[in-house]
Image (cartoon, rainbow, N blue to C red; front, side):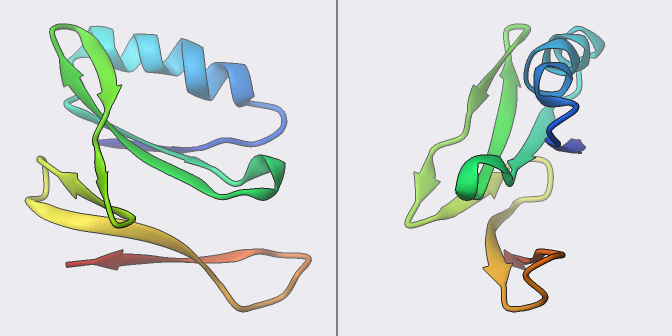
Length: 90
């Protein structure tokens, strides 16, 4: 499992280049968090046949095959200059 957080300087690297490299390395799950654009995006990408596809969300929860649990990422109240997030698990 690999987790990447997209930043303004790494959009292409995190969403295209590393995605391809992790797939080639056989990483079973690629967690991608993108806080840019005014909307928090959280995806768990599952490797199948050498390519990643997004795991379907169920009411905002995403099941991880690696951990056998479901996860949800939420924005937490906090300092507006330094956003905070909360990863929930069930």
